[in-house]
Image 1 (cartoon, rainbow, N blue to C red):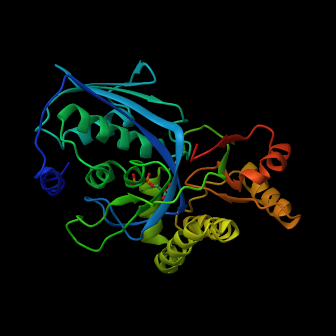
Image 2 (tube, rainbow, N blue to C red; image 1 turned 60 degrees about the vertical axis):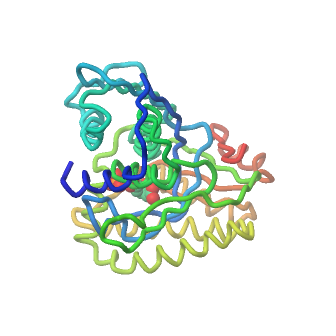
Length: 329
Ligand code: DP6
């Protein structure tokens, strides 16, 4: 928590009236970026170097309940979290930005996705927390304002306020007021995401440290901002015209380019495991054989497959344990 963050929160809340309730609750979906956010231009306000675009994961995400309490406590999936655990520390540090609501909170969070396995639970976590807080405080903020508050908790959380496709505008202002997310008004009911969970282990280096290390030490990172911006535009267009191969190809190349910048950092960041590489090759083989199948990967070993409804049968015969998500169901 810093003065700059406190001032930013005050600015965002300046037009809102507070009508405190006994408790607030909310659900936020997790999201997977099709064009990735990797690198910050301002760590305090959590401003990204490049814009990014994601698709929300429907009913996979986080349900959070919050109330004022005598003493702060955080529960995750029904169990009290050790106050020294990074999850509790991050949650309670974030809530210190909101003294106008209260000093101590009881937070109860249920995740139906593995925590910190590259499936973006911090995204749905901070989005649900901000929405639950908005409910508790009765501010009645819209998704744009909520996305800027969630951003302070975790960048990808700013994209978890809405269902469907969401774009996070990097913005250019130093005060962070033009860096927000909004829903893209396109439904694509045939769009499918397959989660290939290869490992649920916590990653050794979190996204935050990983991206800072990449920005500071990777020579390849110099080419990333321009590519990320170009990919963002192409994917937005592909969604608009529903060009699936254009979307898939751009998303896959974007993810692998991000991993190339990570690997060229020092010390190197290698989130991929042998099983991840095996799956990348398998997807390429299937695509060469005519299947319209693409993939994306975040800062972890798990692979997310991208395909359309028309390919479900074939995809399932190749990946029988695949968890299939219908983002527009
Ligand atoms: C690889 O949003 O977790 O998933 O803002 O530091 O909390 P912080 O980082 P975070 O980074 C997400 C990185 C990514 C790509 C993406 O979701 O766009």
